[in-house]
Image (cartoon, rainbow, N blue to C red; front, side):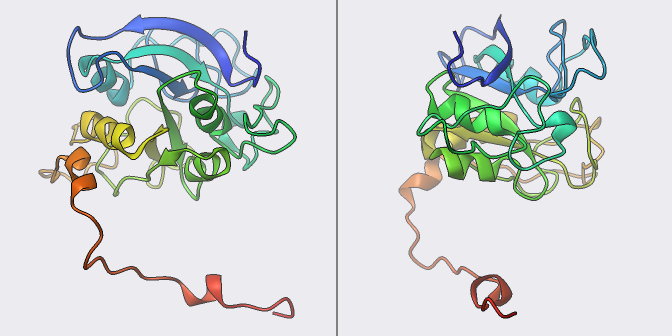
Length: 226
């Protein structure tokens, strides 16, 4: 059963016996490769395409002990912001199916919100993972450029595509980022040098005292006449 139409395909690929994500189930946006499992990019344009290799992030999820349980619904080739263009139907917002789950990673946000997976990976350029997370009431983060390797996904633009972890808690989102971050020579975004890593899951203990936040004035101060 898939009451919110979050899956394009269900599967079960088990990772290592131990690791940061041991016992966690993960869904991948269906433009991220999982070897031997068909990938659609939310489209019926290329029926029968089956990757022969894993994306780097897929390798790292499995090494961290995660179990991958499905490929998640999305806008057709990620070209949209509401997931309404998917050839596999619209993923629904679990909080209210009359509302949009967002896009283009709508299935990634909705799957976590519905409890269908513990963690999901979406892909973001201008909000395609953060919007579904926000609209579905879960947590996502767009990593710093070059922090998470993008090799093995279907690109819209390899210079600005970002693979983003999504979970129902900050802790699980941070643990996932810890698991998938780090340079890889196959990555077209790699900055060709060491990528600074951190124990992101420990930052929850640090608080926000002294944190400086900037807002773009034009996005917060405007009138209907402008």
